[in-house]
Length: 243
Image (cartoon, rainbow, N blue to C red; front, side, top):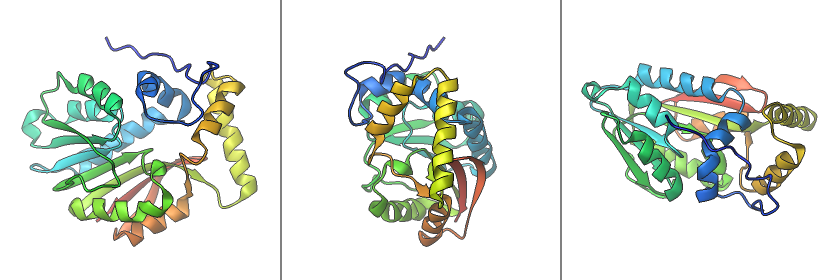
């Protein structure tokens, strides 16, 4: 049975000053996500439902920023080999892909992992669904439109992009409330205030959220005919965009 290493990365005195998707983060990433991201499992389940509705035989499902492959593993249970759907995970972190490879090793579903920077052309083609869970927020804001346009080009007509992101409010006062609610959530999951503060400092200028409206505008500007929110928890939101 798979066991998750507990996230104590920001408890130590030698905790990272800048957040990176390295081996130390990969080791505890599964626990970090479940304890740091509200509705993490529920959003995974909703993403799978969208994939089941829009994926079609002979096409690819891409998980961009697939990290340790949890979503891909869960999708593999839903799309057996005879479904004719290939699962492709893309990430720029070798340690993350190593974890993903171990999770998918026993899967009978066709799958492939690609080590690539999402800012570069990595050959995304024949996609019926593209999933980006907590990924676009790590691409520099000035490069996001170009990246999403490339992803749009690789989607088949009628294809779907699922985007889940941390977001900010257009109101500074509401945004501060969102942040405080999120910190309360983390404390309820066992994180100390020191850990929360250190991680927030490490993510400064690494994770840069947009407002929900800015994300929808970006998706429409990239070419999507429809883009809207399908779920939201304070400063986390899920979007679907249709080609």
